[in-house]
Image 1 (cartoon, rainbow, N blue to C red):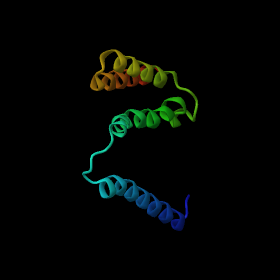
Image 2: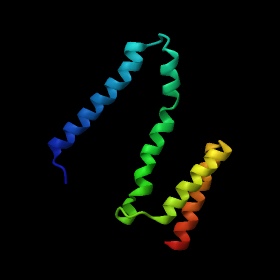
Image 3: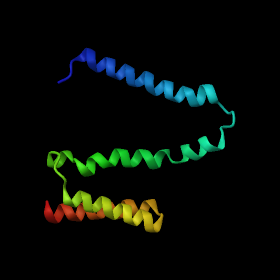
Length: 108
């Protein structure tokens, strides 16, 4: 259990960090044109963030106390394969979710 003072410090720090990050783009840059190389890199931000959020859930899932779960791993691999070959995010997400649900239903 975290004490109340530490919790508020973390909440305020996260709020300040979030505001500062948004202010850099909205306040300082505003509607000025950005260089092409920066726009190209910003386009891949979501592609970089989503795997960073999902990878720990696949490799060290809390549901299995950090042990690699074959069902989650297979669902992630199938999702990647469908996304790579079809270039369709919705098809990849549905495939991964279906394999995860069916796999967890069959194997527990």
